Image 1 (cartoon, rainbow, N blue to C red):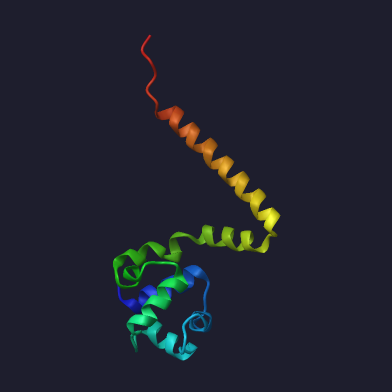
Image 2 (image 1 turned 90 degrees about the vertical axis):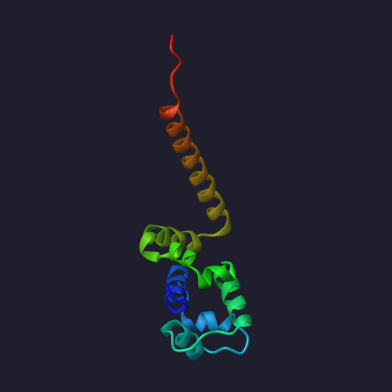
Length: 121
C-alpha cells in the first residue's frame, strides 16, 4: 500500500481533514497534505515524523502494510462508538468505560468457562 493510500485511510479512521492534519505539522498547508494524500508529492522525513505523531502510529506504519490494519471499513461501529464517547462529559466517559470493562470481563469469563476442560469424575 502506498503512502498516499495509508494517509487517506488513517485520516478517515481518525476523522481528520487535510486542514486538520496540516495544522499539526509546522509550515505545511492543507493543499500540501492533500497532494500527499493524492500521491502527487511526498513528505520529507521531519514531516513523516509529524504525521506519525498526529496519527499516533510509528513512522514505519506510514510506510508499511501495517497501516492497512487501520482500514476504517473494518471499524465503522467503532467509529460510531468513539464519536458517541467523545460527545460525553468526563464523568460520563468514566462511567461508560467502567461498564464496558465490566462487560468485556464477563464475556471473557464466559469464554474461559466454556473452553475449560471439565474434570473427569
